[in-house]
Image (cartoon, rainbow, N blue to C red):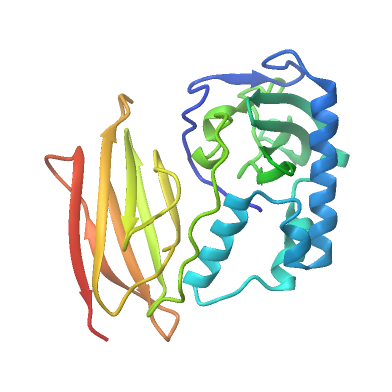
Length: 286
């Protein structure tokens, strides 16, 4: 499952970075081999385009979340979407292994490749790939796979660091294996959710459905569960993270219209009494 990100904050190993060629901990070759085999099996399953095969290699939480997002957008998990996961997933076979991250029933593999680009001084730029796995009763399964949004390099281009702080919260190597989320029903109307939350952790629940992991930077995507006709409930939980640079969180919901344009139906942008729990109800009439 590919995810492109802009700026996201990792609760695990906050403010740490890993130099290329140096592991964060002693490597466990046997676990690395097992995880790489799990990744290869996931690619093969994706190439079949069959949900039944994907269920064997993808975590229950990640697969269930993806299905819910598609349903919420009035779409379904098609063979084309499944096959695209193999097409756009990290290419670890042409990358250099960087490090293994491990914590209980969660683990991650990090790789680095030459991006083929250079900076203004002609120095090579590199790109990182990250794959998270969770150990379910049937074995290790893929929970998240992503390339960094931009090739990373330092000012002189000679030494690059893997930015742990840019892995999304869903990619945290925290030892927790989440169960599959409850399936959602096809909504009355699809919608998009936009959240910005710098210096705060913002958790959003709409119509009883939690909208992914809490946000500590920004996120935009499909509103899981969509909108009801009539009353819609929103619960927003905000806590300060202790980061010096703070910006009052903004939560916006935009309904997707038949013209494929969007219309704002909810906006929360507090100026005071930011922290705590905020509850709202708004109405969709037609």
